[in-house]
Amino acid sequence: MRKLALRDEILLRVDKPARYIGNEVNSITKNKAEIAIRHAMCFPDVYEIGMSHLGIQILYGMLNSYEDTWCERVYSPWVDLDKILREENIPLFALESQDPIRDFDFLGFTLQYEMCYTNVLQVLELSGITFKASGRGEDEPIVIGGGPCTYNPEPMADFFDLFYIGEGEARYREVLDCYKENKASGGSRVDFLLKAARIPGIYVPRFYETDYHPDGTIKSMTPMAADIPEKIRKEIVTDFRAAFYPFKPVVPFIKITQDRVVLEIQRGCIRGCRFCQAGQLYRPVRERDVEQLKIYAAEMLKNTGHEEISLSSLSSSDYSHLPELIDFLIDECQEQRTNISLPSLRIDASSLDIMKKVQDVKKSSLTFAPEAGSQRLRDVINKGLTEEAILNGARLAFAGGHSRVKLYFMLGLPSETEEDIAAIGELANKIAAEYYETVPKAKRNGKVQIGVSTSFFIPKAFTAFQWAPQATRDEFLDKAYLARKGISAQLNQKSIKYSWHETDISVLECVMARGDRRLSASIMAAYKNGALFDAWSEHYHYHTWLTSFTETNIDLDFYTTRKREDDEIFPWDFIDCGVSKEYLLREWKKAQAETTTPHCRVSCQGCGAAQYKAGVCL
Image (tube, rainbow, N blue to C red; front, side, top):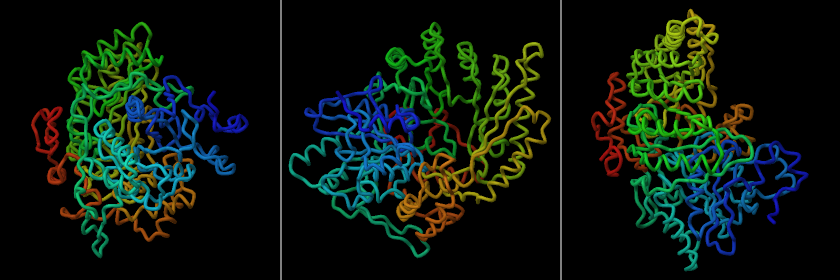
C-alpha cells in the first residue's frame, strides 16, 4: 500500500488536504524498478491552478506513454503546508509516489506567468535542491523550464539547468534519450548539458555570456562552448494529427479553477493584435482535425465525468470547422445537459450563430474583449473590431436570452488619450442600451449587467509593442480614475460594474517580462525577503520587491518607462520565436501611424512563421 508523505495529523491541519494526497482518477502509477527516468512536472502555483492547465495534462500523459519514463506531478504547497514542511524538515514530494522531489532525474517547471517566479524558488528550497544551477551536484535533478515565459528566460537564468523553447511534444523524447545515453556512458552533469545544448530548441544558460554597454543595454550575447547555436529556434508540432492528446486527463478530488474537459481545437492566432504575445509565440496557426476532436471530446467526457467542456484556443471563432464541431457537441451534450464553454469568441458575424446555438444548451455570461474603447485605439493595437460589430454581437446575445456581459479593456496602451479612456464608459453604456432596445420589458429578467474590467498594459517580448514604454504606477492610477469617472457619467451607470487590476503587480510584471539576467539576483533577494505567491493579491507585497531591487541595484524605470531605440538588442533577441524582429518593427511603425494589418487568412505579411511549413502558412 502507498504510504503518504504527510501524517494524518498534518493533513487535518492544512486547508484542502486533497491537494497533497494524489491518487486521483486517471493519475498514473508505475513500478519504479522498471523505470529508467523519473520526471517531476511542476506548475509553480497552488494545486487548483496547476491542475487546470492543459499543457501539464498533455506532457504528463505524453511522458507517461513512454515505457522508460514515469512522470509525476508537484505543485507549490500553500502557505500553511509550506510552514509545516519547514518546521518538520519534510522534503517536498510528488503526488503519485509521495517520494521526495530531490530523488528524481528531472524537475520540470512550466512558467506561465512572471508572478510565479518566487514560487519556483520555494519548490527548489523545499525539495532541497541548490538554488543556482551552477552549484548543483551530480545527485540533484536536472531543472528544466518551459512555457511562454521561457521566451525571455533571462530573469530566471541562474536557477535553471536548461530551458525548452517551444512545444514539448516536439523534442522532449530527444532530451530524455540524451540523458539516458549520457548516464549509461558515465557522463557528468555538465556533459549532459553540453549535449542537450546542441538539441534544437534547448537553451542552457551557463554556456552563454552577456556583455553590456555602459548605459546598461545589451552589447552582445555569445555562446561559450563549441557547436552550440548563437540563436535558439523554437520547436513546434507541425503535424497535429500525430500529436499526443490526453484521452484520460487526471480528475481532481476537489473543485479546481477550470473544472471541466478542455478540448484544444487549434494553436496560434491569425489576428496579429500588437499587444498579444501568445498570438506571436504560437504562430503559425495549426488546427486540429475535426473528426479527431469529436473522438477526443466523447472519450474525455466518458473518462472524466465532467459536466462542462471548454474549447481551448486563442480565437475560437477562427477555427474553420467550428460550426460542425459545435453541432456535434450539442448532440453529444444535450442529454446530459453538459455545458459547452466557448472562451475567446470574437464579436463578429461568424460567431453570432454559434452563440445562439450554444446558449440553448445552458446560458452563462458572455465575455467580450474590445481591449480599447475607441476605434482609433483599436486600430493602433490592430484589434480588427468595429463598434458596429461589438453592438451587433451584444444585440444578438441579448435577443438570445443573455443579460450578463463581461467586457475587458486595457489602460495605458501606446498613444492612449483621455478621449480613448472616456470611450470605455461610452461603449459600455451603448451595450447596456442595446439590451433595453432589444429585449421587450415583459421578457427582461431584471436589469442588464455589464461588467467592465480594465487591466494595465504590459509590453511583452516578441510583440510589436516590445519597444513601447510602460506608463508609471501613478499614471495607471490616474487612468483607472478617469475610466471610473467616465462610467459614472453614463446614463446606464447603475447597470455597469467596474473593476481594475492592481497597478503594482503590472509594473513588476513588466520588469520581469522585459528583464535581463541581472534580475536573477533581485528575484532571489525578494524570495529571501518573504515574497511568495505574488500572483495572489493577499500575499503580494510591493514594498518587499522595492526593497529587493534596491538591495540588488536595479532601476525599475530602466525596464519599464525607458524609451527603446529601434536597433536596441533585447535580452530575448537570441531566441527565434518564429516571427522576425523586422516584422515586429514594421508593426510598431504601423501602430504609430494608426494603420491596421489584415490577418493571416486575408494576406500573408511575411512575419517569418512560414519557415515551419505548417498550418495556415501552407
